[in-house]
Length: 198
Image 1: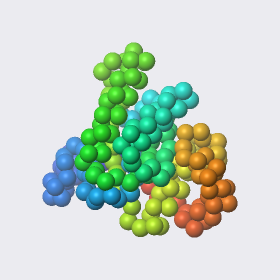
Image 2 (image 1 turned 180 degrees about the vertical axis):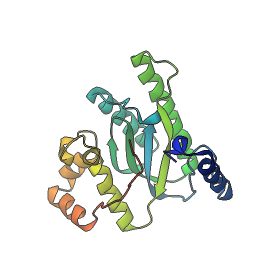
Image 3 (image 1 turned 135 degrees about the vertical axis):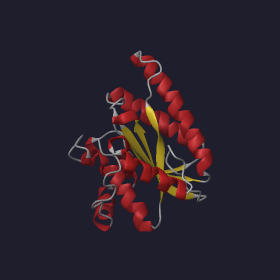
Image 4 (image 1 turned 30 degrees about the vertical axis):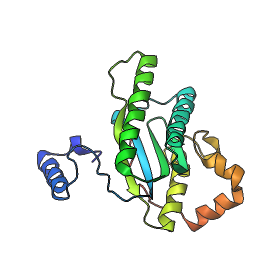
């Protein structure tokens, strides 16, 4: 749906009809109920603008995100914060409560960012999407995808060069060897292709 505004009217109408058929909301991503599932959550800045681009803001939002998840006592498996989006792999007991709380995080951080930028009223976030982990392979491939995201988008050449991710926690607590073996066993390949096209 990222390209919806670029589509012709017929394609837009077909996409909306499909959403109605499956009972999905018309203008927001569907959140399928599956209690206590691990999900990859993706939050994207409105129109993919790099609103979090400074190191100070990236660090600040990372702290806000992790503190928010910790406050809800959620099990966070991996995360990355980039200038225009973030990913987090987290176990969610109730997706409806989670998305409501995530909306509050987005609202609070939008207010702070806009105040700092003197851009009151600007839309910073455009909701969040989620995908349920279907298997152990899906889970570990997602973990690799998250750590590889700064490389994928060209911000750095190596995972360790990006400060705003769980890679450093894994390096310290699991070891480089564990991470290398995980990458070999669960390669990303084309995982996530077109999810967060800039």
